[in-house]
Amino acid sequence: MDDDHGRISTRRIADAFAELLPEHREVIMRAYRGASVTELAGALSVSEDIVKSRLHHGLRAFRSALQKNGVTVQ
Image 1 (cartoon, rainbow, N blue to C red):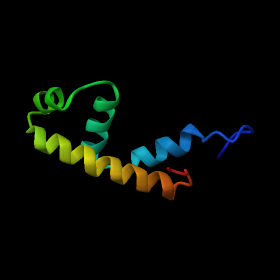
Image 2: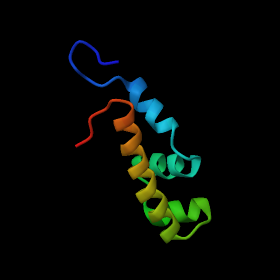
Image 3: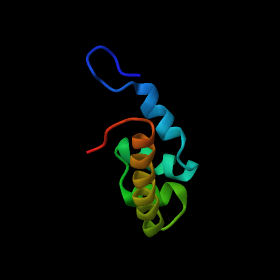
Image 4: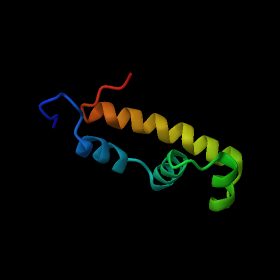
């Protein structure tokens, strides 16, 4: 639900984020906090290509989930 100023409820965003696969949530959250692809690959014991793929697909799924939850994405 939006507040009086038209801002998006953090609940809608959290609900959309919760819909993601765990491996997508993990890389998105760590990247958001500033981890590089190289750092993520090392921390998760996967290749950089896998990290990039998870970021790509995770962000695409997040965008779709946001739209499904009524959040306008530009």
